Amino acid sequence: MPKNKKEESSDSDSGPEDRTPAKKAKGEPSGSKNKDGEYVIDLDGKKRITVREFKSKVYVDIREFYEKDGKQLPGKKGISLSGENWRKLLASADEINEQLKNF
Image (cartoon, rainbow, N blue to C red):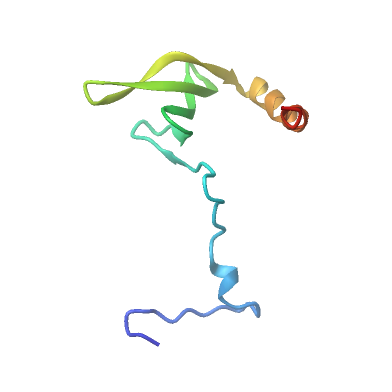
């Protein structure tokens, strides 16, 4: 075993694969926190999803951003969904996916 590789131990019988984090599929978005502590998922282009608090309420913001003076700023194109509306959207996902198959 190379010197720079630490030996790992596990009580599991299945070996090292149970210690490997699940990888996301290629092209699948993944999120991170921004400097304001908001959770952000970058979509394609300049579109992103942000989970943020505004006036003591939490929203899922799906918005297109633009660049000005080297800063990324939110544009007018987008929508902010309350938690309730977000859950309704997710509950409709299967139906929407079925409709997408028609195109």
